[in-house]
Image (cartoon, rainbow, N blue to C red):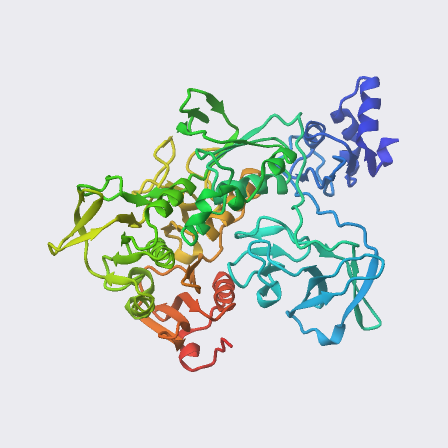
Length: 632
């Protein structure tokens, strides 16, 4: 009977085979010889499927294909072309497929010929007398096909219709912070959006676009996740509970991993939205409000989270992690996502109690308690973190002085022209800026501090906040190649030099098309979340190069600055708009090529530029100079 089988119910077959003493290999012999497509459907475990897969050679074998609340899964093997019975050469885990709620109404949302190719439209949907909720959808047209999803980004609810459709990836990209979602499945695929967006069935009837909607329209939904299989004994460890670590944990389940996931975080909090702290210090006293996932979520998806778990060492060669308490953990694969720690001031007095840095909620609470209204505060460092803190402290009523190594804020990255505009903006808000200066010593005088400058001048203040950069936090790792700054060197897929070890986020130095293959390390939240996801893909056997264009954002006194690209140096700066009014698009060019773009008040130009850079389709410098490019 099996000679002619094309579909096999795995549980029934296994039970029958066991009854007559046959194993899966015996079952597969006639099927392999006939070259029949095999589809295995049912509650089959990876152990069963792997046993079947041993009969294939050169066949990519996917499992599980999808799972739902009833823990059903389908395992699909492609057409069997091999006649030899050697072992399978590759095993690939397929991601779960999102499940839509049942549709109860069909809504006409547009005329098909009124939606242009590549257009994104937000459409409001009215409620109904029988209780169906009102809401909004995003309607997209790509290659003539219509797609309907939730209308808002799951990060900060930005309207996705104001974003961009990346046709080559079938993604919609948030106009504010570069998060991206799959238009077909709603799954988060890039950046800071952790929740998925809902998707809806679409049809075209008599020229009308019809969307099938459920009774209750949700803004966001939990991504489709694989279920934990107790028979899958693999242990994947994530070291670090920040942006990259949480993204890796999520992505492992989203990509179909059914083994054990252990996330080790040295903090006492569940993963939280760290960038908020520098803009709102008060959030430090309520870290639960910043949580990106709650305890119930981790329990539901069988992701073990250990808080206050500080790693003493990670021996990459032995695949062994030792915790400070002495516990040893042996892993099958691990990703280091420990980020970076604030750089300390290497000067006398740099460790005084009134000298603070911002890393976690406790730091934010301490700074907020010290830097109250009317207090004189010195911020050392004019990078993004330093200027964000300066703006926050000024809004709290502090008297703020910023000390910078460069003549203007952000000068090293954004250049002097743009930096001078930011400086003037801060001075208009009452922040004093002293450029091209440094601190040689900090003295305690009673309850006050004195910052001694290189010029010999002494600045009296009540508190000092340091924002002079960070250093990669990978000193506990041995057995893997490191860069000069102590970060872990990876390939383009975020795999380190040691088998089974990966790195993501601030701690990873990786090869990229944006640096012409040269190693690069990026300290951006958006990059960290995306790298966490990609590292997880690599861990489950889906090698994919990290080609995302680095993207960064900051908020300064309510003004949003976006920066996209990778530019270590530039020889020309082209500006479209007005730098003084902080409404512009700035193009950073080197050797007649646009390397990076900075914008203020021009969304979604930054995310559009990022997609064009990724695809190698950024407009030329000549076209920009000739006015052939519109940013309106």
